[in-house]
Image (cartoon, rainbow, N blue to C red; front, top):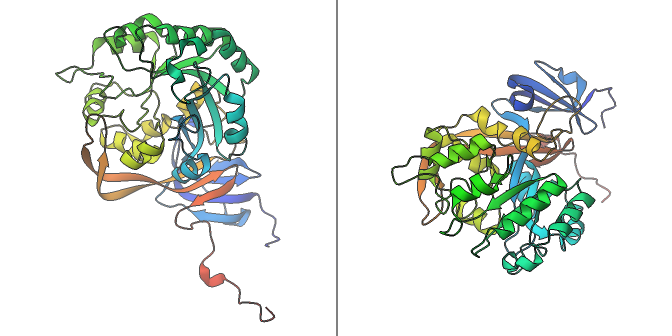
Length: 392
């Protein structure tokens, strides 16, 4: 153990720091001490750090915030730490896996044991996503949903409505009533039908700051047969409705996303809808989803903003998604690889888009500790291994 007096436990040196929350984009060093961001300066001496990590030619940004993942409630769920931390994702929101009857169990089994910051959207269905309860209107209690949110405002940040196949708006309207009473937003995943068209949903039911997820899905087409964004989507945005990517295994179309982005209809947040099938079919991680949007014409600074500070603000946790001094040291170190890459979308059929860039995660720091290091940047070279003890 080195006994020298140091100011920083870890020093990330020479990287391009992109921190939209603080309007930073440039070459800076980042000093970490006691689990917090201690300093972001143009140059910090290596003598002041116990462990200096050379991140030249890499991007240093706040830990990624994924607004839509699945950690509980059905057979396709993922493991928070194992599937999120290697992708630079340090904060996630479980999108409706639990309802008011199952949230406490979800908290005990998933939230508490995890290193990743986990928040939840409470399903309007009391049982969450288990079995087919999202069809059971009788289990969708306004009062009990609102009460559970008020009981755990530290963890429950909104309400999820999804997959209902009936003819009425009752699940959404109940969710909005509970959300209004408890002061949270609603996220909806609803495929339009003749009885429940998207236009009516967004203009007549959703409120300011409610979220439409899977915004570039073929099943919820934002564009018409001529690839023009439908005018009522712009009207919904003017009203204050938010639009989330929610990539998933069947909810992201290159054609729709390309047309929308070309017409300046960018998402408000970037998320994965990460579950077993979306990882296997489409590599729907945060870096890969960010890569697809980069290939579709968005700039890197905006992509990082929509993956860090903006979703952190939406869940009312602006202390996350930032590299500001004294912020918790949750950091993603990303690499923009150059080469020949193929990326897959989904929907009626998966199709490939080629790109000369791909974003990957080199290192993840959670609470000031390196928890993922793909190429051992923070480690000593193997040649420094001491000789074996001859007495053993």
